[in-house]
Each structure stands twice: as C-alpha cells, then as structure tokens.
Length: 196
Image 1 (cartoon, helix red, strand yellow):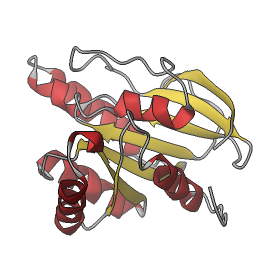
Image 2 (cartoon, helix red, strand yellow; image 1 turned 180 degrees about the vertical axis):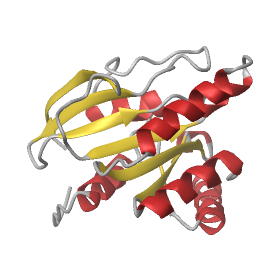
Image 3 (cartoon, helix red, strand yellow; image 1 turned 90 degrees about the vertical axis):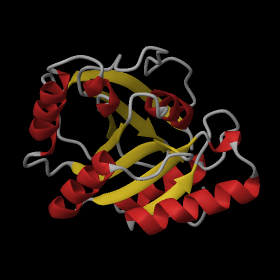
Image 4 (cartoon, one colour; image 1 turned 120 degrees about the horizontal axis):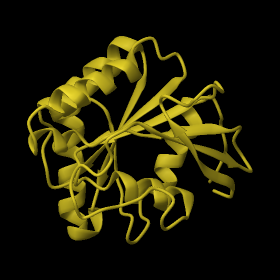
C-alpha cells in the first residue's frame, strides 16, 4: 500500500470533516499503536508507550493512499487501562458511548488483541456493539511473530471460532498479515482490487 499522507488530525472533539472511519480498539498492551504505525509505514506517528493506558482520548489520523480515498484511522484508548486507576472505566465507557453512538462514518472496527489471549468480555462487548450498528469486525491477532506457524494457525482458528469474526494474524515486527488488514479496509469502504 502506497501512503501519500498520514497525519494526526485531532481528537474526537476536533473532527469536523466526514470521512470513512476505521477504528482500532483493544487492550492497552495489545499493540494498537504499533499496528497502525506498521500499516502506515511510520515509526512514531501513533505514539507507543511501555506504560499501559497512555492513550486517554480518541485520536484521529487522516490517511490518504494511492489506491483509496481519504479515510480516518481512529485510535481508541486501550480498555485495559480502566483497571489501573479508579474512575477510568467510567471514563472509557463515556468515550466509547460518545464514539459509537450514531456514528455513520464507522466502516470497520478492528479489535486488536494478542494472538495468545482468548476472547474476553470486553471483546465480546465490542463485537456486539458493532453487530448492532451493522459494522464489519476484524480481529487483528497481533504478536504473531512470537509463536510458530502451527501455533499461529491454531490460535487464529480458535479466535475465529470464539468471536465469529474474521481473524488475521499480524505482526508489526515481521509485517506479516498487514496486507490482509489493508484488504479488509478496502472491502469495508467498497474498494475492490485484484491484488495488494
């Protein structure tokens, strides 16, 4: 995928231009920021941190490619941070409600999770929200470079069975699976290509 432009566009409070949205949600340590950076071929556009819960807002990144019209990639706060300090769960819930409520621009929800973890109640909640909205869901099973090929196939199949969603094993380190994520983005906004 050839990226023409990828820039920070602001938080959910700043956005005025209506564009198709691809939202990334997951636990704080699942690798959301690393995945977005890898998809965009950038190292530090989306800030990564070793401290869980660094992202405390809904951040928009405007992305233009050679093949696609302009889209927003939306980095949601990691829901794992809600367990770190009191009151943060309600903060996350409020942000999520504001983001999902009546959001007709949302075309694809990418749930980012470590391939070695199972689907939990938070992921099921997100899948249910997307289902009610009629929004496509993709589970991006990150850190696939940390398991061998047979484990990767088995773990991805288990995630698919338990989530009833499309699952792609990905790695920001060796870049495996990134083309599949871009293909899902294409399809979610109605673009069909013969190859990536």
